[in-house]
Length: 338
Image 1 (cartoon, rainbow, N blue to C red):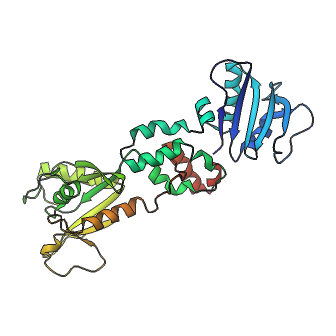
Image 2: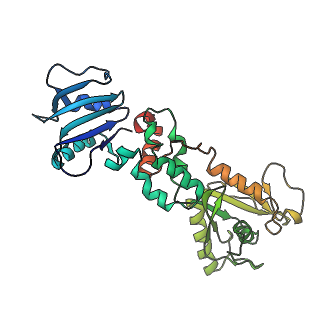
Image 3: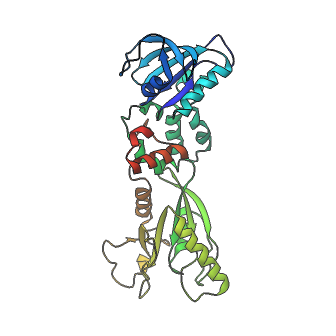
C-alpha cells in the first residue's frame, strides 16, 4: 500500500509538507512532478532535492525531497486548499490518506484507534495497539506477509461465529453451557427444547468467539419447531466454523449429512458410549462431566487462528485493508496492496 499524509499541523501556514510513502511512491511522484530543469532519474537518489511544478498544466511550484527509496516529501505553499489539492492528486493516482500531523510526529496509525477502543480481549487489544503504533505501516517494503492474517484482522473486534449443530438431544445445549461456564441454554430431555438460536460471547485463548446453540436438525417436526430448524440451518450456513455434535450413547449415532461439511465433529456422552468410538473420526467429550473440553477449545482455536502473529507483526485491522489483501492474493498482486 502507498499512503499520503500531511506532516505539518492543520491550518494555513507559509509552507506545508506532504509525504508519500510506499512501494509506488517514486512512480507516482515521477508522474505528478516536473522538475524545472532536466528530468527525474528512474531510481530515486537519496537526499536529493528538486524544484519544479506539481500537477497538470502549470501546476503549483513545489520542492521535492527524497527521504528514502520509498519515501518522498513535497514542500509546498501552506494554504489549506493547496495542501488539499496536492493530497487529492495522490489519492486520484491510487494513494490512501493516512493520519495527519499527530501520526507523522509520533509514528502512530490513527486508523487503529477506533478498533482499539472496541477490542474485547487483552490479546486482540495488544495486536491493535501494535498497529496503532505503526506495525502495519512499517511493513511498506513487504518484509512481512500481512495477507496471512486477513481472517484474524476481520475478527479483532467482531467475534468469530461458531455454531453448535446436530440432531435433537445430542447435548448441544449442555455443551454450550459447559463451554460458557454457566447455564446459557435450557437443557431438557424433550426434543425441540431449543427453538431459537441462543448466542453467548466468550474468549478462547484470547480470541473473541460467539457460540450459537441451535435447534436440533430433524424432519417431521411441528410448525414451531420447524421454524427453529430453519433458523438453525441459516445460522449454520453463515458461521465461520461449524461444530457437529454426535450422541455416542445412541445405538445409531447420526453423522452429519449437510453442506458445507462441519469442520469439527465431536462425540458427546463418551462416558456412556454405546460402542467403541471410531478412532480419528471425532473428538470424544462429555459435556456433562467436562471431559475433552480443553481439546475441543484447542481444536476450535486451531481452525480459527492456524498461525498467531508475533508481537509487533503487521496485521490488517480494517475491512478495507483485509479486502484489498484478499483481492490482491486472488489476482496475484499482493505486493501492491500492502
